[in-house]
Image: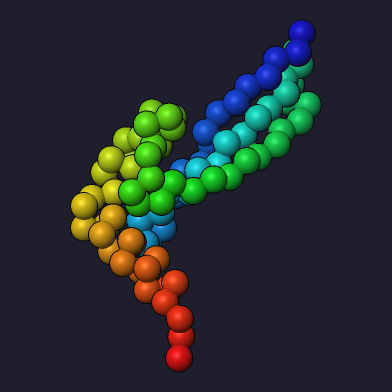
Length: 84
């Protein structure tokens, strides 16, 4: 019997407050893993994370403080200013 499992298997927080999420999709047959694929995405401070996995939501709630969101948004705006 084939089974498809999708799990969040890696959650990382980086210095600027972004939360990197890796999702693994596994194909299992008779308790043996036949294949796996990975998908990565980032939840930036200020992003809506309400549709994320419960573990990701908990980490974002702890990390994405108002101060972190403000600092991230200021850094993004500064990066978009013309240099010179």
